[in-house]
Length: 80
Image 1: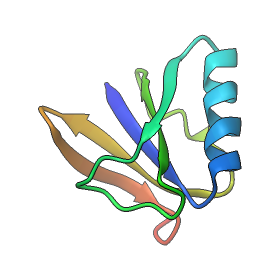
Image 2: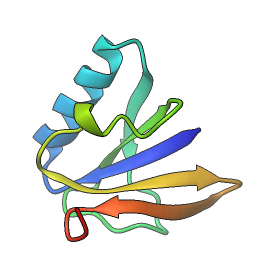
Image 3: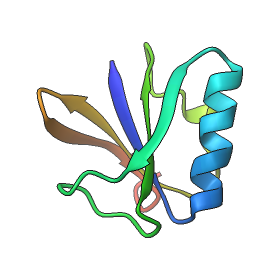
């Protein structure tokens, strides 16, 4: 599965990317897709069998599942 995680701060995105990569999850930081909004403009795109929620920094804004160029919201900081 392909996921996009957005964050309130750039630092949070960096910490998440490092945590995911430290667990051998293919992850990279990219600009947030235009279809999504984000406070800091940086997101982490990653591929994993599940959303890896335990590895995401506490300043998470939202996680989306990406399929065929569209994004489905899995959870957000408002919906915990």
